[in-house]
Structures are given as C-alpha cells and as structure tokens.
Length: 345
Image (cartoon, rainbow, N blue to C red):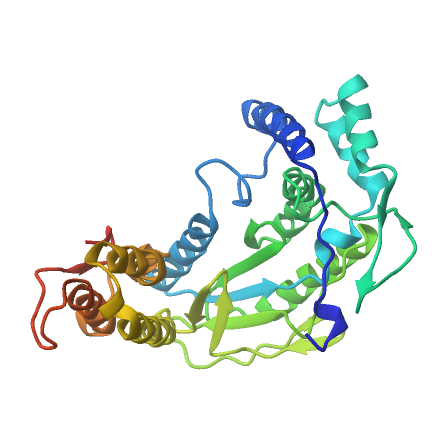
C-alpha cells in the first residue's frame, strides 16, 4: 500500500451501463468467433478458455520438446499498467479492419470518448480530468477490447519462429531448439527487440525487471549459458517462476508448486479446524470445498503423469480435509483418492 505504482483506477459503472456492455459484448464475441477473427493463442475472455487452457497449452509444448530432446526457453512478459495506456486512436482503427463500421463503430467511439477520472486521498478529492487513454478496468468490454488491441502482437512473435500463448496482458513466449544451436539466444533477443518496438508503437511498456525467464534443458544437455537481452537488460534464468497462479520450475516437476499449495491448504485447514466445533458438517464441507478443494482442483491437469510420491502431499491434504469435515480420528484413512488427470474425487 505504500507504493503508489501499485494503485490502479477502477471504473464506477452503473448497473444499466453493465447490462448495455454485456449486450454489446455478446454481439461482438459472436461476430469475432463466427468469422475466426480471434487470436487462437489468446485464452483471455473467450468461451471454453481460461488460465488453465493457457497453462496447459504451454506445458504440453514443453513436455513435447523434452521428449524430442530439445531444450526450451520460457519467457513470461510483464507489462506496466497495460490496460491504462491503451491508445484510443489505435484501438478504434482495429474494429474497422475487423468489419465493424458505421453506427456500430461510432458506438465504440462514443464508448471511449468523454471519460473522466478523479483521485480521492484521505478524504480529499481532486478536480475531474479528461481520460484520453486506456480501457475501463472493471468493465465488461474492457478486457475484450484489450485483447483486440494486442491482436497483431502474435504476428511479430511468429515471424521470429517463437511460439506464444496469452491470457489478457500475460504473454508466455516459448522457443525450443537443439542443444547444439548456438544462435538460439540471438534469435530470442531479436524477437524481444521487435516486441519492445511494437509495445512502444502501441503505447505499452514492457517491464524488464519483472519479466522472467526459465531455461528447460533437454535430458541429455548440460547447463547452457544464455545471453538474452530485453531493452539492454540481460534476462537471467530463474529456477522457478509464478505463471498464472502456478509455480513452474525448470525441470517441469512442479515440486515447488505442490509444496506451496500444500502449505497454503494446511494453513486454511488449520483455521477451519479452530471453528469446527461451532459449525455443522454441511457448513464445514462448504468451507473446505470453496477454500481448499478449489485450490487443489486448479490446474491439476498439469500434474498428470507425475510420480505418486510427488503428489502425495496433495493426497494427504485431501485426507485431512475429509477427516475435518466428518470429525474422523486423526490417523483414519478416508476412502478418497487424488487423481490429477481427472480432478479431485
């Protein structure tokens, strides 16, 4: 809270405004999907897509590369205040290229025009100022408009031979190459340079200090020193990185993710246990399902195929949750199993 850069504006929209936006959103989404105008590598704010589909797509590519004896580099791009810096003139030029013209285009122009903002701090409110950039955060249409705004970024990435997958403003870059390839680092750096230029032209700002890189070596390859640069800053490989709520490591073992997940679930179970004497079985079950089981279920498809000893901590968490719900003795074994490939059961 003490860092002013962490604060973001949130649009105050009336109920009627959100209803109207939802109507436009449904029509716009239908037009984009029927005409195949959406980026196939964008999982944000699309039907049957989520953070899980984005993570699964990238993880499967990494596993396939290891099976093919290829090394891989995964780069997680970070944008600074992405939604707040969208240029309205550039944004309004995109619907025309997608076949949205006439009164429909004028509606979007009216939607973005004449917005204003105020800042309230310690009981004092600033004067109203015109807001000439950005898509409204907290709105129904804002995220979809941002996805359209960054639609051409994929062409820049693909031109360098890199793969990518996005969820809103979170972009995952992936490049697999033979361990003997000595030009992999220069190819990735060239791609990052063009991405940075594209961002600058679209009034977006990459944050090199928060951009993370993971090097996943092929099974038979030794450690490889990579000199990858972004805006004159060298990206140092990390052993782990948090990506859309999942901690990915350079061995694709997800051991750190499982450890962090187990720790947070044990803390939640401890707090629920303290109030268990005052709750019914049904109320306790609701708490456990919403706070604990939901965490176990999130992206558990990524854990499919891992050794049983690796996912055993999650099995123990689920057993403890069942004992807590039904007030069973500490060392009893509930007839439950944990199946990452199909979800918790």
